[in-house]
Length: 253
Ligand code: SAH
Image 1 (cartoon, rainbow, N blue to C red):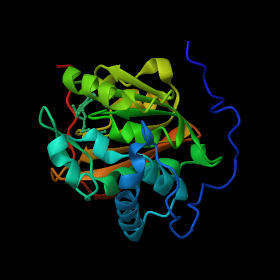
Image 2 (tube, rainbow, N blue to C red):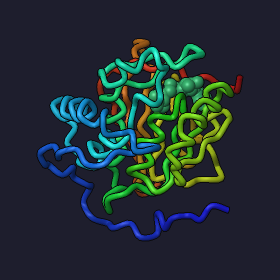
Image 3 (spheres, protein in one colour):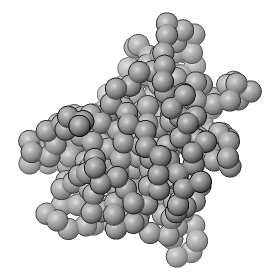
Image 4 (tube, rainbow, N blue to C red):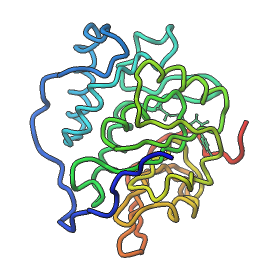
């Protein structure tokens, strides 16, 4: 059995966490499988500066984006584009999310009451893809459960992440529409694929004070980022900006 972190037993009942407004720190250390990370630090630091310029202020998010070497998650032919703010193909018709969108969604996740103490508890990611966002999440959460419905990508993510030795990332193969009950309740649930609605299993598996951050197809057929919060057992939903994610699909393949 995985040892469960103390969440949500010791949640402070303080005001919602406010992002710390600090200038972007100079890059420190990277989450590199070997000692080879230094050469990409500077280019990653520029990516982080651009993300900060777009309004991401949470120092935890910026540090995590600086730490994870995105170029290790894309095809060798695409490595020179790895630090551009763009989604890139990862095979099987799927894409690695744009860095600025990864940062935005994780900042929203960390804005919950459940993250007030600094680090999130358990997080569920739906749509592992190549494993990049799972690695970023591993820097801000105590445990990351990441589920992927395509066997080929699940295997690829495992290969990509192996060398990082992230003991708090748990890769699962299955249909994320059902969530992952064994890890529940989650302080945060983040989806990298958008459906017509957020499945009830996700809200059921969300901890008190936690947040779901997910793309959702709106009645006008456009996708928007949605934040769902659970407070005093009640759910509230906020619709934010338009986004473009691959569709949330049911079943495995
Ligand atoms: N998190 C990735 C993004 C992957 S793209 C990153 O770091 O860049 C979204 C992924 O969601 C795709 O791999 C797709 O196969 C997966 N997906 C779609 N519907 C799903 C479902 N019901 N359960 C699990 N994964 C799903």
